[in-house]
Length: 273
Image (cartoon, rainbow, N blue to C red; front, side, top):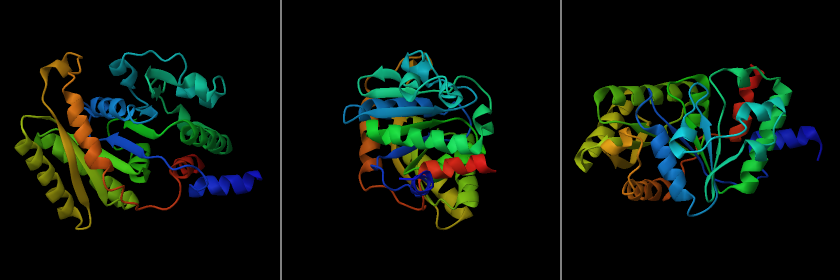
């Protein structure tokens, strides 16, 4: 197959085995996105092979929470000094991580043709070797976060019950909808005291989102209870059963397809501007 045809197929997202792409995002930092990503990835690794991409190009910290130290980083792959296998860090059985090195915008200054070619290889690597792909987004509503959140199969917002966290989550929904017309979102509420607090938080977020546009829908898929141990760097084992509930609700009915084209083709479009 010639390169032009191969690129066209890549950008349309066809010809490759389909696996779930799940992005875990939110508003400001500190709501527990990385914790939720870890819990979900750990549980999914019992069903198949999981790859997590730490997409926080400012302060990547997934490797800290998971207790591993990458030897090679995402930048090394794009610079041509490491293969995809070399930048992949094993976290646990069936559970791998790809992480950036440090806070910079290096990846957005690549030559467009080179970027598309490398992203194509990354796409093939993921679908050939994994059953689930999770993206741990950085804080804020940067363009790359918006694009990822609008393009994945499952955009999962993590928030806390406090009003500022709800406002931040609403800001993400409003921005992504305004720029990319994404209407369906999933919500996980972290640090809740009881199920009523979870339900109330999701209802407030859903009502706020619908007040902005009637077609927006926020589906609550579960919560993580408050645990003082988490603030001390521990992950209590009982939290994993809450992750089971989240995954059951999230994956139960399949995702709500809203956009055309492949995920990596849309990311590649960033390099053309």
